[in-house]
Image 1 (cartoon, helix red, strand yellow):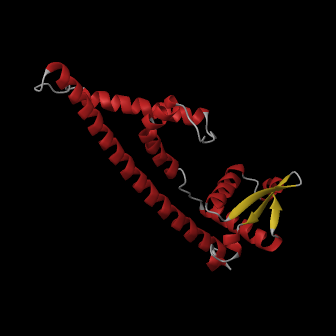
Image 2 (cartoon, helix red, strand yellow):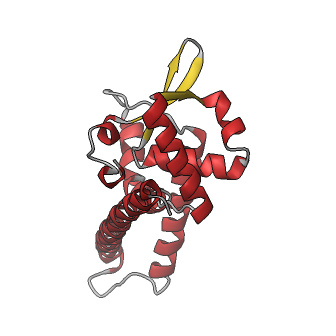
Image 3 (tube, one colour):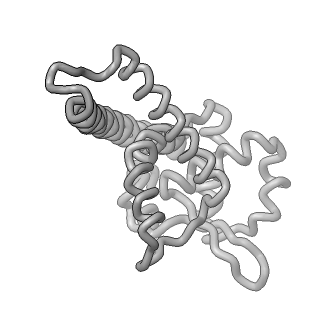
Length: 200
């Protein structure tokens, strides 16, 4: 394995450790928020039933199941909303209904963030690592490469997609459009030795 590939492997490992940390943190926060939500809904339900039936009343035995089904439905609604409006721009002013919807879907969105963080996990095969290292070295020598020429250099479409996505996500390369052409180049962190320093 080349030094650049070894350095890239270590960089990916550090990236994945950060991903694992944020997944665990998001999972902990989401679980805590669901617990608090359950407690609040249980208390409101108990207060309402007590006001109607008396102090000896208690929520129905099906309450936990109803809460779980409702939570699953809210998560599904949040997922659909995110799929339909992936690039929705935050607005300074919202109606009361929109604010209520944001509040209602806050915990489901936090739950979906677990999968969002987990999707940042990156893994390249040994062959893809070597190809990625080759691409990094080419960019070191030539400063930039046109993206349309990459299929000639890396014919395997799956490997090419995995490599470009992983290197972008790990802040090794960046894309910039100039003159109607998308160019690949190394990020400043790589050029300054803050990333893949062992490869220089």
